[in-house]
Structures are given as C-alpha cells and as structure tokens.
Image (spheres, rainbow, N blue to C red):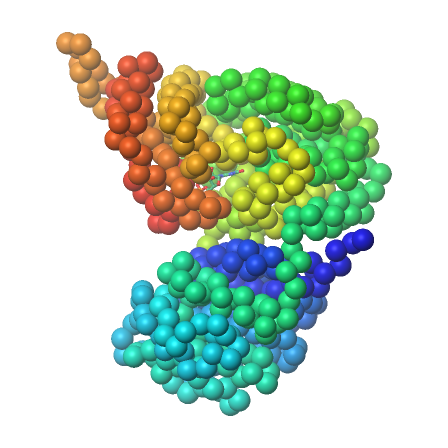
Length: 517
Ligand code: XMP
C-alpha cells in the first residue's frame, strides 16, 4: 500500500534568510513529519498549491521596517492553515495582521527566562518558566486583533502569542536550537496538537514513494549515475536500482583528484556488494589538464563540475537510450548553492548542482534532494547497504582539488595524498573515524622555514582539519587529544617529503566552512 500520508502530512517552511531555517526543518523531520523549505517569495499560488498541514515562517536578519524587508503575500493567512511565526516570522505576522512592531530598548540576544502564561496548546506539558534562546532587536508593541499573549520575559511583554481560533502562533525565541531545552516539545505541540499531523515520515515510506516516483519519471529510458565512492552517490545508485534494475548504469570516474588508492578501492567495494552495471573510466589527465593554471576556488569547482557533465554525456552516447543522469544531491547542497534562489546567501557552488550546464541533454534524477546526510545514512541502512559504505566520512565532489589551495599540480596532489593517508590511519587507529564527521589534510599555498638535521628547509605546510557535525551545515573542530596531534604531526613531517610544518585548524562553521575552498 502506498504511504499516501507522507506528502499530505507535510509542513511548509518559508525562509526569510536565517541560518536557523535548516535547523527548523531538521527538527520537524526528527518528529517524522516531512517538510520543505521554500523562499518567502515563491508566490501565493505555490504556497496554496503546496498542500500540507501547516506553515512555519522562519526567522531572518531583517526588521519588518527595513526598506527591503522580505514580506510574504498576506493571502497566506486566508488558507485556513495553522501558522507558526518564529522570531522575524512572528514580527512579520504581527505587522501584516495589523499589530505594531517596534525597536526594543535593549536587544535581546542569548539565554533568557520566559514565563509561560498559557500552557493549553503550544506550550502544553511545559512548566510555568522555561529557558529559551532569544535573538532579536524588535519586539511586539501591540498584538493584532484576535491574538493574546501567551508568554513574556522581563524585556518582551509579548514573547509568544496566539490566535487559537485561526490557529496562528508566534514565538519571539528559537524553539529549534539546543539552547531552548524544551523547544522540541513546542514544535511537537505545533505539529501534532495544532496542525494535527501524523508522524508518517519514515525511511521505509520514503523508499516506497521514491521508487514509485523514479519509475514514473524515468519510464523505459536508461539512467546513468556518477559514483564518487562516497555514501551519497552509492545510496542514490542502490535506490534507483531498486526502482529500475538494469536500466541503470553506474559510471565511476577517476578524476585524478581522489585519495590515495581510492579509485581501486571504490571499484572493488562496488563490485563486491552490488550487482549494478558499472563502467570505470580513468580521466585523470583530462581533469588535471583542465585545472592547469586554475587557482580560484569557485572556478575550480565549476571546471570540475562541468567536466563531469561533459564526460557523462559522452558516456551516455555510448550506451543505449540514456535519458537521465542521477546525482546524489542532498538538501544542504541545494540550499547552499546558486540553484536555490532563496534569501540564504550562496556560500559555495557544490559540484552536484554547481557544475550543471544550461544546455544539458540529460535530465536529472536527484531522489535525495530533500534529505540531510544523516537521513541518507539511515536510508542506506534501510536499503541493506554495508557499514563499510555507509560509515564513510563525506568527501567533496571536487575532491582534493579544493584541498590543494592554489594551483593543482600532480606534485602537490602527491604531497597532500601522502599526508592525508597518515591522518586517516591515525584517526582510525584511535577509533575516531566513524565518530567524527570528517578528518583530512589541506595543503597550504605557503612555504615556511624549518630545520632538519643541520639543514635549513623551506617547505610546505599541511593543515589538519577534523570536525564534528550532524549534517555539514554547522560544525565544530574536534578537541583531538594532544598525543594524537603530536603523532600525526611527527609522522607527516618525517614521512612526507616536502612538508616541514603541520598546523591544526581550530575554526568552527560558521563563520568558517569545513573545506578551505
Ligand atoms: P563546507 O566546506 O561547505 O562543506 O562547509 C560542507 C560539507 O559538504 C562537503 N562539500 C561538498 N560535497 N560537493 C560535495 O558533494 C561539493 O562540491 C562539496 N563541497 C563541500 C564538505 O566536505 C562538507 O562535508
């Protein structure tokens, strides 16, 4: 039986530009309710056409009185759907429905104690006083007709409000962040008590609905799927294979930008576990030629992305009746890339979405476009894939090219590979490989002076990056034990020719990113 309810049970999240928007989506999905983020300006028709059980207006950096403040079409409030406004979302709701928003005397940022004055619906099950995370410069002076305040703080007389009849709710604070310890209960109340959603979003139901969708979209055409060796493309391939069997051919390209021994290993693992048509191509010269003289990070990404597509199109011509290219694009790639025209800023062109050509003859199949990384791993497990594939740390599409800062040459790639092997080896030895998100080497475009034996050296610097993360959207550097750092540093400097210094990257994301380019 088809799980008809995952899509009728969904929630629409309108993005007003906050980095927290993705976090709201994660929290909703953790409750097994499907949701999608769309830019605030998708237009009333699309909002209406979305269907679903409720709408969340996210936060954003603006004030409703800014000249270019993002404003949603007011007809949203006539759809008869429950609405939850978070922070800016609440202020906008107030502004649009006839209330008054004003600059607060004091900006409220960080931890705050909120007194809950009404625990009947949104705050059901919570105590009278809770700790929440605030981040706003404006406050509600007068709430719109039909509303009443349901929480206050010393600074905000209206820290939350509701119009129970129309099922409109607003909170000045962020229920989605961990610093609001009982925020999940608030979101749960909105989803289940107010929107009356059912927790129907499970990996089993996702597989069923995607298999059906892929079959319908592809028909009798052939599909090629680029394998990178990473978990995303492997899960994409297995999911598509489940839907269309031998109509799928996987293509594994050695682009000369892989880790040491990776090309051979990927082919081996893939042939061992999966019975899917596989073509392996060595295109390292071709990619390295293209990258000759390219130093700009975005240009590197685009060059590599484009080259992949040219190559896939060429391969498609050699096979019979190929109509589609499958990619393991994930939700964060979509959100952080140019193709998503929302207000969240473009950070990097991830190759999956960044390298696409305007006139590509193959159509795209991206069955995981709506998933976060940990959801992909759960999906892989549900599909019966082995840990060896599922637990691999993420590896970026443009490969080592974005870890050799500056020009990418075979000699510099060699130095990076040799350092990288040592890092992975040591991280695995202490049992950290599957516990942390990523650990890798970056070759810096600077040389430093050192002394080896009695000789002065003037050699390269390797940066070690190790981060913890849930989905790559935010990350923190791992507090690796000093002894491990010492061992990695000493081995790299002693064993890798051309390196005389190792530094440890202690930046979190944001404001840095995980990769250096
Ligand atoms: P950043 O550097 O944006 O990386 O903080 C977030 C996560 O995404 C990976 N990454 C990529 N993955 N194609 C990919 O498939 C790409 O172009 C790409 N760039 C970054 C990165 O390794 C990290 O896990």
